[in-house]
Length: 159
Image (cartoon, rainbow, N blue to C red; front, top):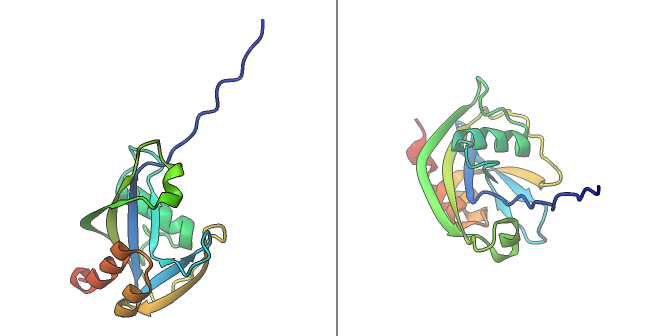
Protein backbone atom coordinates (compact mmCIF):
# COMPACT_ATOMS: atom_id res chain seq x y z
CA UNK A 1 0.00 0.00 0.00
CA UNK A 2 1.34 3.42 -0.93
CA UNK A 3 0.41 6.57 0.77
CA UNK A 4 0.45 9.85 -1.00
CA UNK A 5 1.21 13.06 0.76
CA UNK A 6 -1.79 15.38 0.79
CA UNK A 7 -1.65 18.24 -1.64
CA UNK A 8 -0.11 21.29 -0.04
CA UNK A 9 -2.81 23.76 0.87
CA UNK A 10 -2.12 27.43 0.34
CA UNK A 11 -3.17 29.60 3.26
CA UNK A 12 -4.53 32.79 1.78
CA UNK A 13 -4.80 36.01 3.76
CA UNK A 14 -8.23 37.04 4.97
CA UNK A 15 -9.21 40.29 3.16
CA UNK A 16 -10.24 41.92 6.43
CA UNK A 17 -7.70 43.96 8.35
CA UNK A 18 -7.12 46.61 10.98
CA UNK A 19 -5.44 49.99 10.98
CA UNK A 20 -4.36 51.08 14.46
CA UNK A 21 -3.33 54.70 14.98
CA UNK A 22 -1.06 54.67 18.05
CA UNK A 23 -0.79 58.05 19.74
CA UNK A 24 0.27 59.82 22.94
CA UNK A 25 -1.80 62.23 25.06
CA UNK A 26 -0.01 65.08 23.22
CA UNK A 27 -1.41 63.63 19.92
CA UNK A 28 1.95 62.51 18.60
CA UNK A 29 1.45 59.51 16.30
CA UNK A 30 3.74 56.51 15.96
CA UNK A 31 4.70 55.65 12.38
CA UNK A 32 6.69 52.57 11.40
CA UNK A 33 8.66 52.03 8.18
CA UNK A 34 7.92 48.88 6.18
CA UNK A 35 10.86 46.55 5.58
CA UNK A 36 9.60 44.97 2.34
CA UNK A 37 9.86 48.00 0.08
CA UNK A 38 12.60 50.32 -1.15
CA UNK A 39 10.40 53.43 -0.98
CA UNK A 40 9.78 55.46 2.17
CA UNK A 41 6.64 53.54 3.19
CA UNK A 42 5.61 54.89 6.60
CA UNK A 43 2.43 53.68 8.20
CA UNK A 44 0.53 52.96 11.38
CA UNK A 45 0.12 49.38 12.58
CA UNK A 46 -1.84 47.32 10.07
CA UNK A 47 -2.58 43.65 9.67
CA UNK A 48 -5.06 41.07 8.54
CA UNK A 49 -7.25 38.79 10.57
CA UNK A 50 -5.67 35.36 11.04
CA UNK A 51 -9.09 33.70 10.56
CA UNK A 52 -12.57 34.83 9.55
CA UNK A 53 -13.74 34.24 13.14
CA UNK A 54 -11.09 36.45 14.76
CA UNK A 55 -12.68 39.74 15.84
CA UNK A 56 -11.28 43.05 14.64
CA UNK A 57 -10.42 43.91 18.27
CA UNK A 58 -8.48 40.65 18.69
CA UNK A 59 -6.68 41.38 15.43
CA UNK A 60 -5.81 44.92 16.57
CA UNK A 61 -4.38 43.70 19.90
CA UNK A 62 -2.37 40.93 18.19
CA UNK A 63 -1.00 43.12 15.40
CA UNK A 64 0.01 45.94 17.77
CA UNK A 65 1.96 43.46 19.88
CA UNK A 66 3.55 41.69 16.87
CA UNK A 67 4.66 44.94 15.22
CA UNK A 68 5.57 47.16 18.19
CA UNK A 69 5.75 45.01 21.34
CA UNK A 70 3.00 47.12 22.94
CA UNK A 71 0.32 45.23 24.91
CA UNK A 72 -2.78 47.09 23.70
CA UNK A 73 -4.88 45.39 26.37
CA UNK A 74 -2.58 46.59 29.17
CA UNK A 75 -3.62 49.03 31.90
CA UNK A 76 -1.68 51.98 30.47
CA UNK A 77 -3.27 51.66 27.01
CA UNK A 78 -6.67 52.76 25.73
CA UNK A 79 -7.79 50.90 22.60
CA UNK A 80 -10.82 52.41 20.89
CA UNK A 81 -12.71 51.10 17.87
CA UNK A 82 -13.39 54.22 15.85
CA UNK A 83 -16.23 52.38 14.08
CA UNK A 84 -14.87 53.41 10.69
CA UNK A 85 -14.20 51.05 7.81
CA UNK A 86 -12.21 51.61 4.65
CA UNK A 87 -12.67 49.41 1.61
CA UNK A 88 -9.83 49.64 -0.86
CA UNK A 89 -8.13 47.87 -3.74
CA UNK A 90 -5.34 45.56 -2.62
CA UNK A 91 -2.08 46.73 -4.20
CA UNK A 92 -1.30 44.44 -7.17
CA UNK A 93 2.13 43.57 -5.71
CA UNK A 94 0.38 41.89 -2.72
CA UNK A 95 -2.65 40.25 -4.42
CA UNK A 96 -0.85 36.89 -4.63
CA UNK A 97 -1.29 36.62 -0.85
CA UNK A 98 -5.09 36.46 -1.28
CA UNK A 99 -7.37 33.88 -2.90
CA UNK A 100 -7.71 34.20 -6.68
CA UNK A 101 -10.09 36.98 -7.62
CA UNK A 102 -9.85 38.82 -4.30
CA UNK A 103 -9.01 42.45 -5.02
CA UNK A 104 -10.71 44.36 -2.18
CA UNK A 105 -9.85 44.59 1.51
CA UNK A 106 -12.02 45.87 4.36
CA UNK A 107 -10.04 47.72 7.02
CA UNK A 108 -11.41 48.54 10.51
CA UNK A 109 -9.88 51.65 12.09
CA UNK A 110 -8.79 51.83 15.75
CA UNK A 111 -7.00 54.34 17.92
CA UNK A 112 -4.63 53.33 20.71
CA UNK A 113 -3.54 55.88 23.28
CA UNK A 114 -0.25 55.02 24.99
CA UNK A 115 2.07 56.77 27.41
CA UNK A 116 4.68 59.02 25.81
CA UNK A 117 7.48 56.88 27.27
CA UNK A 118 6.19 53.57 25.88
CA UNK A 119 8.92 51.20 24.67
CA UNK A 120 8.76 50.22 21.00
CA UNK A 121 10.19 46.85 19.89
CA UNK A 122 9.90 46.47 16.13
CA UNK A 123 9.69 43.13 14.37
CA UNK A 124 12.71 43.54 12.01
CA UNK A 125 11.15 41.29 9.37
CA UNK A 126 8.28 43.76 9.06
CA UNK A 127 9.64 47.21 9.97
CA UNK A 128 13.02 48.90 10.00
CA UNK A 129 12.43 52.13 11.90
CA UNK A 130 9.88 54.17 13.82
CA UNK A 131 9.22 57.80 14.59
CA UNK A 132 6.76 59.94 16.52
CA UNK A 133 5.23 62.93 14.76
CA UNK A 134 2.52 65.47 15.61
CA UNK A 135 -0.72 64.28 14.00
CA UNK A 136 -0.71 66.70 10.99
CA UNK A 137 2.91 65.78 10.14
CA UNK A 138 2.15 62.08 10.56
CA UNK A 139 -0.68 62.39 8.04
CA UNK A 140 1.72 64.02 5.57
CA UNK A 141 4.27 61.20 6.00
CA UNK A 142 1.85 58.25 5.55
CA UNK A 143 2.11 56.30 2.33
CA UNK A 144 -1.51 55.13 2.41
CA UNK A 145 -4.33 57.67 1.85
CA UNK A 146 -6.61 55.85 4.32
CA UNK A 147 -3.87 55.95 6.95
CA UNK A 148 -3.31 59.68 6.35
CA UNK A 149 -7.05 60.30 6.71
CA UNK A 150 -7.12 58.36 10.00
CA UNK A 151 -4.27 60.51 11.35
CA UNK A 152 -6.22 63.65 10.45
CA UNK A 153 -9.30 62.32 12.27
CA UNK A 154 -7.41 61.71 15.53
CA UNK A 155 -8.46 64.94 17.32
CA UNK A 156 -12.14 64.00 16.83
CA UNK A 157 -11.72 60.71 18.68
CA UNK A 158 -9.65 61.83 21.65
CA UNK A 159 -11.72 61.78 24.82
